[in-house]
Amino acid sequence: MADLLSATLPVVSDPVTVGGVTLELVPPTSIVSLGAFAGAGRDELVGRVRAEFGVDLPDVSRAVRSSYGNVAFLWNGPTQWLVVGEDSGELFSRLQKCCGDVCALTSQGDSRTILRLSGMGAREVATRLLPIDLHGQVFSTDCVASTLAGHIPVIVWQTAQTPAYDFLVFRSFASSLFHDLSVALNGHTFSETDHYA
Amino acid sequence: MRLTCPFCGSRGLEEFTYRGDATVRRPSADASQEAWVDYVYLRDNPCGPHRELWYHGAGCRSWLVVTRDTRTHQILDVRNARDVMLAERMSPEGKGEGS
Ligand SMILES: [Zn+2]
Image (cartoon, rainbow over all chains, first blue to last red; front, side):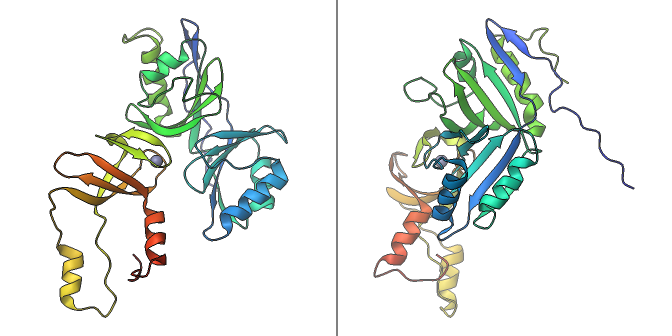
């Protein structure tokens, strides 16, 4: 029998707090991508999700949250969405029943990791890495953007007014992004908090 | 240089990849060898507005048709390539396969 790989966290650093802004690894989350099939797939998918989760899939770069379970739908490109929910197999099987025949469903839970930056001043820290405008007038709660944090591709989701930002990042880049964000958190200096693996 | 993606808004050049001339069209399978050589190898090098394909790889991963002035880098228009293709198929001149 094959040896199973032991489960290790993508980031081993403890949460870092500097000046009221906290950077932390979000506990494992279920992430599933939806890609509507060509033709009538998109409209059919929107209808199915509305029936099962009570929300309309966004057609602009935003997230909508379903009150039927702790689930959010993030726009991730034309006819593509990411579903983010609690860590269990339940979300995937629920989606499979709901819309598995009208879209490509792919589990991204092992692909994406979420880092959270929160607290007063989080915007200033995020702005040091992100090339997009995060001003509250143009980027507010539940706004989503696919962009680059330095050289690392990320999906940024503002999850709270405070503000708080969730960075959905490829697992293999999570440690580097944690490092880059902790440097941004400390101004431009290296410090003791810089003990990423 | 910045491009205004129809889906993501104004973004820096580092998020995009240049693909090439957006005006070439695939000839029909029985077209002459000259037409195929032209399609595969020959490109105009215009001085002024030109339509180009760009890929928003670090954003929404859409293909875009960008009209750029090659003298000034002024961006005159950005459209979703899929919409451009569908509009072309609907138009009276719309022809060619796989374009
Ligand atoms: Zn885009």
